[in-house]
Image (cartoon, rainbow, N blue to C red):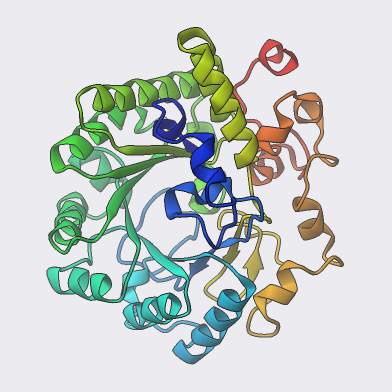
Length: 393
């Protein structure tokens, strides 16, 4: 992820991360991406069930009724292993995590083991009572997905009223003092909604918003043709930067990030070279600490059935199952060739990535997109919008 507010608006300095020694167990959440040890943030898709039918769902979620393949007892054993392994964050996702009745119990168990617990949700099931429960167990953050204004959001979610329920979920979290933010996946259908998202953030005083670039997986794989082209992507990132700056200038700074396209880092750098060269040099130092895409290294995924993946979007490669072998043993197994190579992608990437001067700060971007588009895991990421001139220097 690329912190637009951290980098472009100067909300974070390199010294902020260095002060904590850059160890993931010691860094506060907003600096975790700059850790030197890259212990994995683990996304657990704890259920495949969901009460909505989002067109861009990477998990291909199913109806909310039913049972889940990992029991509460098995989940606690998994959390024991993750905590001992040093994974700093447990991200409970889905489907919709709130359809599981043991979510609060498991979040409390994770925080009790010293992990930070966060959830990724559509927000529609966060009642006042549920928000109070989540706050009481030490949940660090609630990320609520929004796709634009009411008409656009409800169309994406395929359930009328989803927008109003999501915003009510935001308000219920705020009323309990629970940190809440928005998640927005950019594509051709909703790129024009970016200013509306910023309007909501400003009017509701929401402290954080993440803009996700489209990854071609799950139902998202059916939307390859709806991804922005390179010029449109560049314009969208510029708009996000402009809107972020406007919030800072208005005295209402927010944490704004873009996720899943590390070309955004060099793009921020190039813009600052024109506007503030001194800050550009500081941003380059931060980008080097960040190290770009962390699939299979700084982030990992456990599916609803226990299968371990390099990240939550790339499910056609499985490295083991936590119901059969602890995550910690799977993750560090040098005999799992692909997972081992993902720990350092630089010697393996091809095409423009192989000769790009920003490879050290991008990390080769998303292998899932390369494979979906070219049929080659190590091909260049088709969503990289940097020009040949920019990457050659």
